[in-house]
Image 1: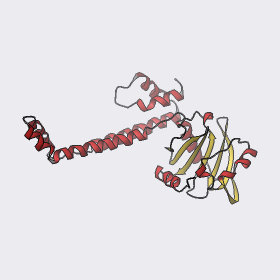
Image 2: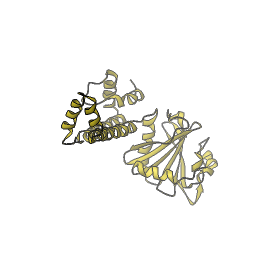
Image 3: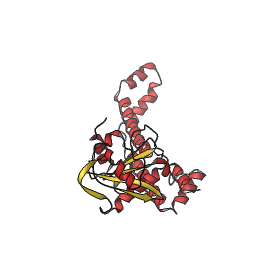
Length: 253
């Protein structure tokens, strides 16, 4: 089993449950891989948080009586009508709704895609930067006009989603990661950093035309989107809410 295969199977692993043999193998593999071990730790912490939230849901004090009313309702149509007209059904529906919301958020957090680990690695790169890496300019340049400068620096095929073309870039660079070239520029608001790279270089498959996929790693939050074989990653130090707020400020073409 390699790291990519183990990463794909980790969402199926739950500590304390009897796991599938392949999921167990993936978890054991992750324990010896620093990046996957951190991912497994975050997954376990989130599982514990969700289970704690579910267990914290307290049923109404009179729920037993209301359930008893359900049993009595089986004796005749009148009983059934009384139950349906009571607040008991609303209470039960409320509990189910809360559980459904928790499950929905859990599924959203598990939203995975090939190459997600590589994208999370780029967020880790942000945390290691000290500000001297980028070629800072005196005057901002529209990001859509960086193609020539980045080409001269060794990055070919630079392309951005249309809504990014006019945002002011104050510094940029081309660098290598795992043998592949990436372009990066800084935006003059929200302290945002933007990466542009070929999806195939890192095995990233977010789905053409898919909306932004949110990720988080080591205090940084990001949103990634693929278009025309290129990926754009927006990274901001903070939470997913800050990234979503930034995306809302972009002018749609």
